[in-house]
Length: 219
Image 1: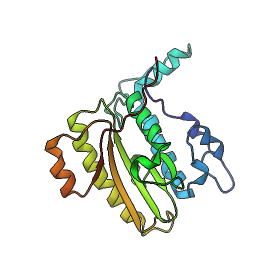
Image 2: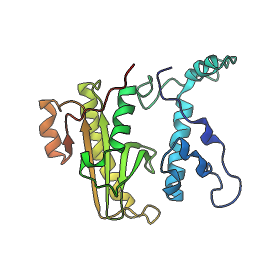
Image 3: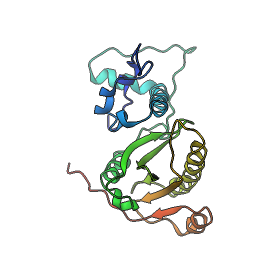
Image 4: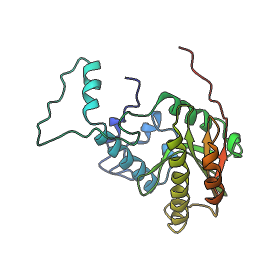
């Protein structure tokens, strides 16, 4: 399909114990670092995924078709959601490759090897930042824009960074998250930030790292 399919495995949750209402830690096969999240962070992650599952809409029929299963028939009353975080088309391979590449190279954003990477980290608002690096003294949240991003995506990225910084500041006041005093939000680009947005980045106090090339997979 060429798009990121939501993890319906997350719908299978524990009915008892400390992880009641949450997937077992075995889901780390899909969500690296999941066992190291706090219980509240796990709930945020799962609920964000439930939104993705619902928004995948009619595209689930493509998944069923690829498995030689019958499609779901929707009535007009039921409707069918077609929207998604990625504008209805799903996450691009270029975007996915860039965030995975970054998660393996924390030094690109000034994080040392002790920084634990969390890809698609979910905030209490159910917004998700592409990569969050954590250690006890410092958290660095990074929004990435791949080489196929439009100029409008760059503008959106700046304001996403503003939102993520505000969310982290609010989370400092909640003991469920243990956010350290030192936080930073970065916009990382495979290309160069257009000149028209450079002043906005400065005024919004957003650090922008440009021209980071993720290796292209051989076809």
